Image (cartoon, rainbow, N blue to C red; front, top):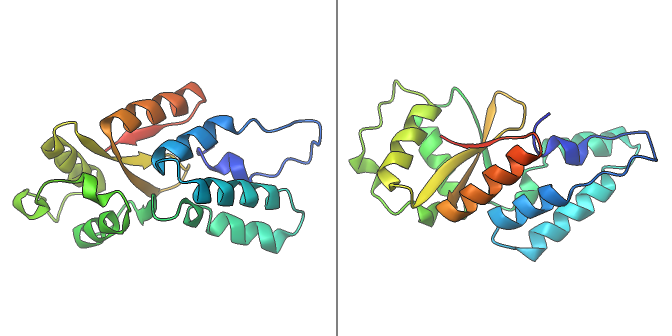
Length: 165
């Protein structure tokens, strides 16, 4: 099960209470404690307990829109141009403090290769990461080294992964 899937998975067992504190903590770290995003996330989680299947489908389709520009999904087979465009959509794009056009990003490679090349050039100051959402899509985030260390540890401690590319 992907990291954020747990937020939107309905469980008809009323006695089982979801402990989502680790997901909130990861979200706080990714969004630099943006209270608006945290509150929207919590509000959408409350809605996810609804039995309205149309509402649930809408929530699942837009679950990452809640993260307000701190995460952006791309297909694992995307083109280099689409990958670079997706990175620029992230609010934390400024953490990439290098000229990407100076890198040797081969159009025939893939998302993981491009991300690895950029991460190497960043020298550990920041990381392009992928949140495991149990899909063939990559939910990209860009975080500084301190945040990466924290969120990857929290995710791993709870059976999920957030990996640098």
